Length: 199
Length: 199
Image (cartoon, rainbow over all chains, first blue to last red; front, side, top):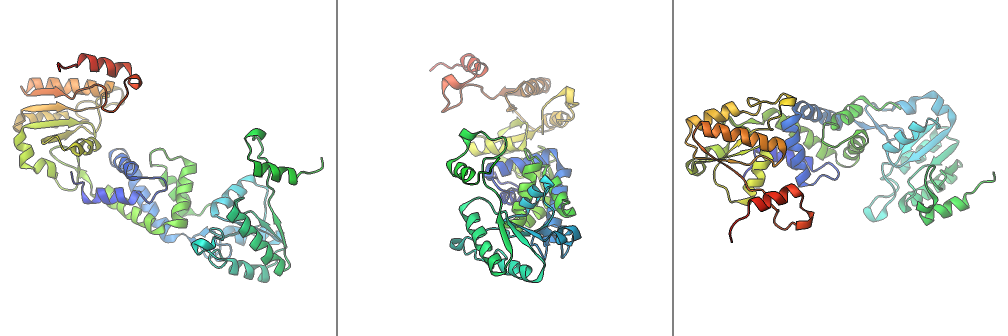
């Protein structure tokens, strides 16, 4: 049986969503057509608008509809002299939810991965270099993910900071709060032991 | 932290997808913006077009961009005198994949559910009644889902067929091919025993 053109086009297009295969795409398309046409139309409009309008902040590279994002324009954050380097804009959301950090961010939009052709310029380290030279940053907090690539990237940026005579620090690794010790992997445990503090 | 307007609108809109909560919606939005903007734009266009253009076949009620769908215009299917009643257009896809059935369909777009306000007219039984009177249907095959609501709906349609002196049959229930007997539920097993055939 041949599906109508718009329907098979929709099923194909839905496969750009992460984790959605042909069968789920079909299920979603039928769900929207049968039960939620308004939601589907609204999603269509929102997607078109978002993909069209959302660019990157010229200063910190996060997602933003203006040239410079709100966080980068915040005087309190600029004055703090702190710059937190993260891999992705969703990391900013997670950090902001703690309400602990008042400072600026810099989003790499990835991590160093030479085998995939992602070098320092692809993750905006030239821009970060400029930022360290031109603005009054006193400490760079390296909050890349605790993966091999994230650690390598953090190491690389730490050297960049050293070159610019800016202090660099790495967020602590250890046992997560509320976690159980016997479920924690060995690497995390050794970090927890090496990073122990006097009580 | 306040997300940009288009971004939070997109995250809200993504929640119309089945099984997508606030966290997954955020993950999908960031994924599309970071890694697949073309896919996102394409999906936006496809959704808008599909929700706008796809209507229902005037004869069998399946999804269709024209007034009458291909299956309903097929002379071989009309001549067969068979009409298969299903709950949803995706059931047609499943049946067509077997390649066994050559006949027309009628899609209820749901099942009888008086508590939710879904009566005979909401699932198009007035239209089915008309179809039985005006066209040359010899047998109605009831292929609604084997659930309580599906069985009730099938029973109701069987009575409609009797009134119009058209034969009605129900698809067989039993142990699925390739299934293991000890994993099959009791209801299915009793159907399998009651529906046993002489070898």
